[in-house]
Length: 118
Image 1 (cartoon, rainbow, N blue to C red):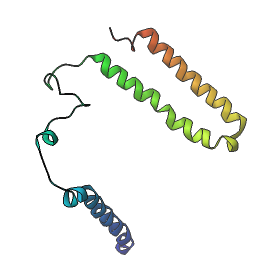
Image 2 (cartoon, rainbow, N blue to C red):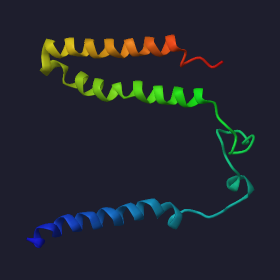
Image 3 (cartoon, rainbow, N blue to C red):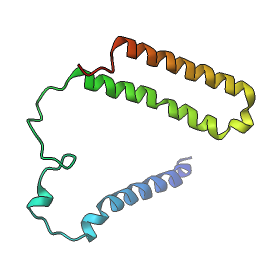
Image 4 (cartoon, rainbow, N blue to C red):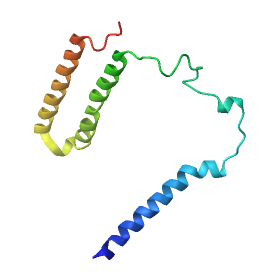
């Protein structure tokens, strides 16, 4: 019974070894020429301003969460679009309902002012 798990254990071992090798390959084979520019902190091409302990507005997190929520719709839209020719008119109606509900949610957050940066 335990011999049935040998291929699974072997696959997990190979995957772990492959991951470690790929993660460290550039470190092992790449050139090492550190200088002041390479070791400096990089933040979107600008020098960092302020402390990392500064407070961030709640609006920033609200927009980020709303982006994630509305971005997840792509997870449902993409497979639907790929298989649209096979699933028929019923799925078209269901997708209109889905997009309509998303639109109602979008109107709700706009009315609540969640996207305003005052």
